[in-house]
Length: 191
Image 1: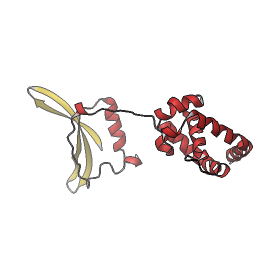
Image 2: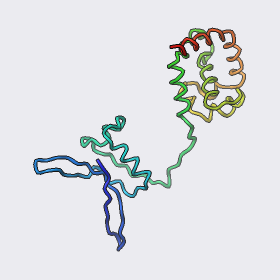
Image 3: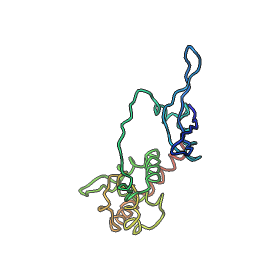
């Protein structure tokens, strides 16, 4: 697949737009067909489309299948806005790292669930991930950091349940298990 620049005259002016074109072979030789009309693209947009159209780009491999028919929805852009956007990548990456280290399972063993609404192991993950991608105090995490991040969705702990008192008590619960945590992390580092 490649990008082709197309031109059109409209109201006496020449307009350029881009089309994503696919090459294929027939008995009469190579042919091209337009997969999608992309409109006007800047350099960054063209590079992104070219990268997505590469066959070795696995996550987008089925992007241009001819079988699927597009569903079109008309949207009034004046009525659309983005609200309460939160950074997601740092928290998700940290959570995947903690799962790779086996820290989630270890915390569930060391801090078994009791009658509390939010398990201590989940509150420990809140502390660790909060410190990982936004190093600050427990007070800042409780008042600003947790609500401004996507950790509530990632961990399933609502923002209303995270407060400074609960975070400080989590540190108190975690302190007696410091040696076990260090031993586990040292062993995982050796592996």
